[in-house]
Image 1 (spheres, rainbow, N blue to C red):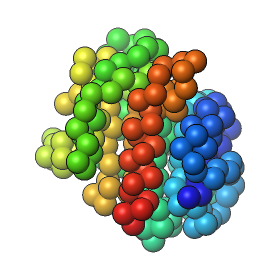
Image 2: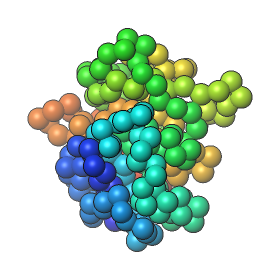
Image 3: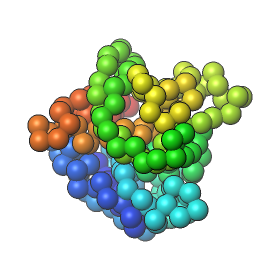
Length: 212
């Protein structure tokens, strides 16, 4: 399976995201924000960082790049799976490729710690532990989208660190082909950091690609 890791100006998690994908047997390449087609890839990852300095709002400027236009085409053609992690999730929401928005944490502080999460995707239902690192990670949505988002949430905080509505830490779209999450699974793949629970997320991506 072939994966693309999108690198914007200000992205800073591309190395560990690529390493995590390769550990899960993906063939992986970096692509930059000027990329105009993603159709050669089975999955596309938008990873963490501070794209374009997070000026105006986190993820706001990245949505205007050619690679996001390419991503829209990729999603419309249902070519593969797209995953946004942390800043990548913010970008997907800013581009309206996922419901809702990500605002400043209730504490107005940058949160960097390991958190417990409830994972519920397909036939998988279990508790996992992943690190978070964000100041704008409070996931919010309109009242009109309450039922929809509640059904699309696949990851929830056990002890909500940021004020996210309904404890949501990760959601997918109506086709389960676009996923966004604030925790960092790529930082929980190796013994030297936060354990191995991140593999659960990458396994879901692999299984969704196989499902077609």
